Amino acid sequence: MPPILIPMLTYLQAVAYLQSLIDYERTPANAAMVRYLNLERIRALLRQAGSPEQGLRFVHIAGTKGKGSTAAMTAQVLKAAGRRVGLYTSPHLLTFRERMRVNGEMIGEAAFARQMDAIVPMCEALRATQNGPPSFFEVLTLLAVRWFAEQQAEIVVLETGLGGRLDATNVFMPLATAITTLALDHQAELGETLEQIAGEKAGIIKPGVPVVSASQAPEAAEVLTHIAAEQGSPLYRVGETIRLLPGAQFNQHGQCFSMTLATKVSNTATTIPARSK
Image (cartoon, rainbow, N blue to C red):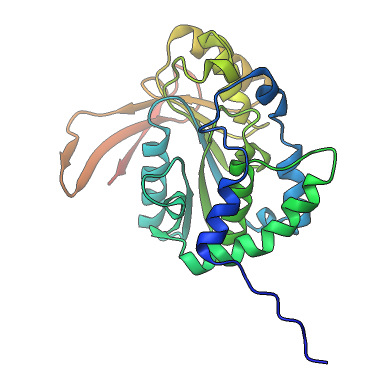
């Protein structure tokens, strides 16, 4: 008897399945949605997929303003240093494929469809458990990580989708984390005050993992300082332990600047000149 051939999803079918899942980027927040936010579904999906994240290294970025730009620039710096770099960002302008790149190249339609073809049975199996169906972003995160592993990315730069503490990207252990400027955003999900929002964003800080913070409002800075101290994580503040020196140059080809980085995380530390292009 000849083998039964099961047709693979097309790219359009893969996108249609993805769009059938709950999408917190578009769904208005409510109490039921906030209760649904947790990390158990993405952990379950990763286990079913064979833990593809275990062969990858990550840089994790959260914040309100500039986190996408910071992620893109971080990826470009790592690529210029000779690394094979994965980049995971959101949202997108024209195609879901914009959200995941390796060395600047988007995932292809065929690869996207092939990954979704493998993931759909995992999603349906999860739907039948107490965890319930995965969200759009959880599935897209799994797809990205599987593809980055397949592409043998050396380092993956991850931008959080919503908040930080309960974001699907927060299940990975990073080499470093960064928190860009914080402001009031997604208050229904993250909290009404800047302190509460800072606490959610700072949820990406991992024990002993260095964290770089943009200049923050005092109430946000206090929260980040407290959480970093609790986690035993070195905290580098732009404008304090990290300082740009005069003479920066910017043009259509890029930017060139000099900076100093404190040898210790304190206001009295000596500095080491560095150069970045």
